[in-house]
Length: 462
Image (cartoon, rainbow, N blue to C red; front, side, top):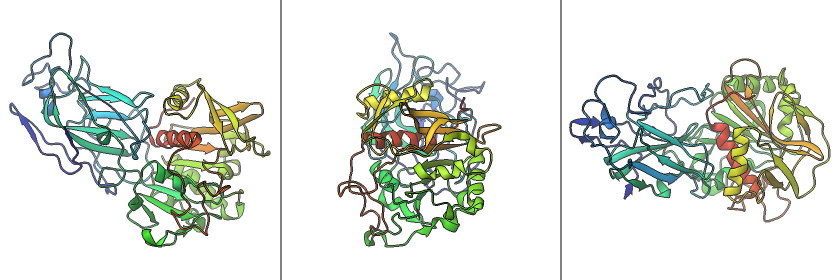
């Protein structure tokens, strides 16, 4: 049986080996210490006797080991599947590991979280989920520690949850229940990235975050204690309904003119406002967004927020070849670029979660047409007839070592209330009154993939 505990874990003492990992920090943790060395993918990088949970591995080969080696080719493993916070959609490329030290806390704001950096907590064994969201933790080189109260961490980027496995049986597979392997819904369950979301009348990104499972308690105005702060964009929802306190959102302008405001967040999501609206995107604001991304921030820009790039400071206009044309047909079948690994992962993942019926293809409603081809960016979803790009990304800064990342989408999550059964963002609808659907459409599943991928560690693109 699996007992979830996000608070301080009890020490596990077996045969003189003591392990007392730190608790998962609260979602709004302040400045944390430096990350501990990664240590222990195969037991430990230390040269002395085993330490902590290393001693409870059947693969332990150092002095002080207390767990006998398995026989007959068996090992001690944990198996399971990682889901989004709602517990509905399995996620790929998520780290799953058993820590052997306290997890370091996070400091909100941009940072160069590259994939070359060590995981916090000195894992003794780790794995990543595959395109089905499945993981098998433990192998003949380094298996899972045996015994009671074994900690398990699920992490992608700054989404992190630590749970406890009541008992891990030796030399056998122990399945982990779904509720233990979903990402956290709120701060009581673990750490969520700090997100700023700007609303807009042509899209409803705020409803997507609710559908992937983030608790309503985490949606607050600027200055609130929630991990997701809403800001009022042109023609988008601009206040909470009475059940969520009724507070109004801060207007996007002049808030986004100041890079210090942006640097309070790990990620910024811009919902389409219906037009470019250059009057509320000053050059000061455009420069601030570039400075934020260059320092390690993550940016998602929907449709007409291409203005930040097309008319941004150099070298941002080079990310794509922009040409504003009529919207694409409804429905429209686009191609997923499988020439790079994460693109191939997306294509396979969509097949697994019911987002696509043909490998490498995505049927889209509300596809826009403002980008013909990529420039310095990398295309994810595109068409050759007519020539268009629906998703692209780029690491930032565009020149120099990669630190942050931007994603530009020429797809609407919703069609802006085109019908009474679709999600809608409007000043006449207090949040979440415009959120009318609960299940994810194929293109919403694609966007969910992109949001979690955007928050993950940075690899060099190209």
